[in-house]
Image (tube, rainbow, N blue to C red):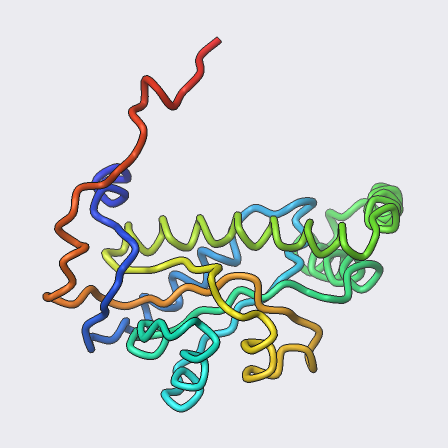
Length: 210
């Protein structure tokens, strides 16, 4: 599909069918998330792929009873890092050297590393978490658009009990906190929301041109 056709086709699914997203398509979506832009390229978050009916069913109670968390093909949980600072910077530069090899300028790397360390050190713990959450939402938008282009349905969600998700998935133990979730799969034939017209502001009203 073309971009606008795909975006007009997608909607927030209310009911999924039992059709399963293939491993190849899932990998494409995960790569799309990895390739999403983030501040300084630091990617202060990770993605959990939940494909376990027992776990998914437990999570329904922490998603305010929304069954699509359990009925979808896969549940993607985007979780922000809780330890943001030197470990974040060190991880980035380890990957930078792997990607660029001998082309990496040691002097430039030192200056840039100091800059990133200072930028993060200037933030309070609350500001760091807010910053990390903002990067998650950039990735979430990219995920939803990529899914639509692959003709995969998705339902981005922030209405869930974070503490409950963290507990069930053991996120605190690995330095993460659930920030956004996105069930993916294929719409059920009986999901009437698929037939409803989109309600959006017109381009003329929405866009300010100067």
